[in-house]
Amino acid sequence: MIRAVLFDLDDTLFDHRGCAREALTAVQQSQRGFQSMPFDALERAHAEFLEELHAEVMLGRVSLDVARIERFRRLLESAGVRDDGEVAATLASLYRETYRSRRRAVSGAAALMAAVKRHARIGIVSNNVRDEQEEKLSVCSLDQFVDELVVSGEVGVPKPDPMIFRTALDRLRVTAEETVMVGDSWIADIEGARGVGIRAIWFNPSGSAPPHPGVHVEQLRGFEPTDDVLQLILSGTS
Image 1 (cartoon, rainbow, N blue to C red):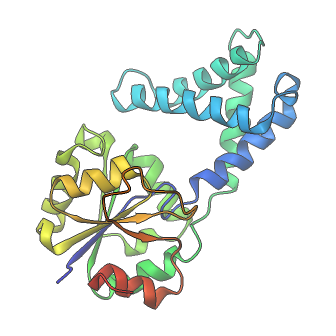
Image 2 (cartoon, rainbow, N blue to C red; image 1 turned 45 degrees about the vertical axis):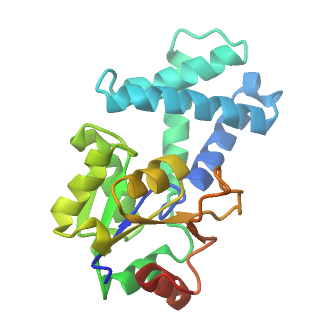
């Protein structure tokens, strides 16, 4: 019997990728040095710098504000634009403001969480800092469904480290056998959860091929219809 459902937040319940694309589009349109770059190339470079600096933030080596500015300084440098930090700061602010104004839940997420809540406790397990994730949940009106928010910034290790999943289980007072994890990252969410004995469901809206074709993992392409998704989560059948 499933007594708890763990969800990843970014690109599972919260549309981080969509918000980020819209924010980066605003940045590209505002900066001449980026306008000659194909958007896909700009997006790849931005994602690379974001991931590098996010790891530094999680380790406590740089602050979130400093990392945001440094991300755009590196992006400008990759486009051949020299900057002493002033332009990067302006772009970081534009990106941040646009991203915040576009924040939204993934389609069907709220209805699914409401349905799950009637049957099980809900935990969010996320590689981020608490303030950021609390605000996303609140803006999207998803916080009302969450029993525990477990973030790497507090636990001290990111997914797929077993400790963050065990922390979630402890806080929700459930066992791994009574729990299911839903997330979009194969390594962080699927392999991480399975590593501690938690059944995992891969949220895969793009229909990407599994990194390990021989490994069977249940998948979701979306969160609708709610009843069908709920049945899969709670019983393993659809």
